[in-house]
Image (cartoon, rainbow, N blue to C red; front, side, top):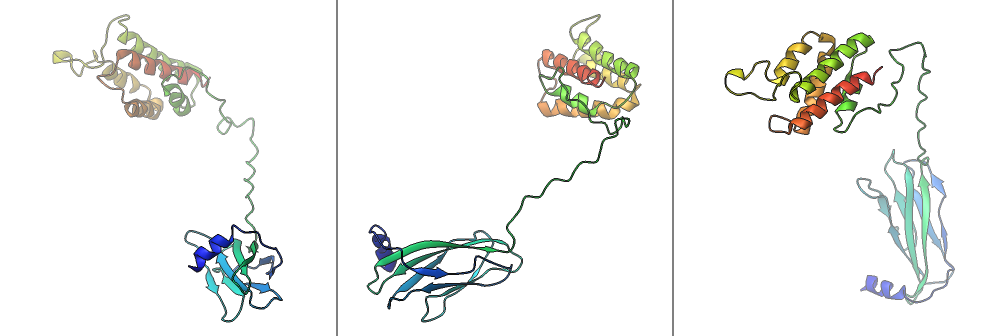
Length: 246
């Protein structure tokens, strides 16, 4: 009933004349003393701790026959403590409502990111790569570009041309290869990925790159039943990613 009465009282005007004292800030783990300084007899302070929330628990102490409140935050915690006080007169009419904020510990400050080490322009190994802007409709171009090893341009072009040739085979040029064969041709070079696997064995420095590309293809769900054009697009993007390294 008392809470309901207080809510009803909030709809009526009141005079802001209560004096609430508290420190502006305290050290982490130090208790906060809130006090209502009021000359008028019979006044009552109704305190409500508004925060913190979650797993942070504060201890509230309300001394008997006193309009004081003591809030004891946990050691090691820092942040603002917000307390609302509703001041009632002797007839339980609202005289004042206010919120008091006390900072516990140091206020949180954003941490500046560490400065990156200076880049040696002559150090090709650590030099940042330019952004890839080549063929990338299915995202394979970016994967190819990011995983392609650092080799000479001639070697890179040879592997890129292997991807080009695999895509051409799927289009029937100069001869046809398929994604998956049946019968006697199953597991032979007539299947384009069987042919590709054998070709890539000649380029061990690209094996990790090849594995990452196949893993990405699998993640896309491109497999035997997928349209041939999707396989062609992926192979073209694999070649484009390699050439983007130049």
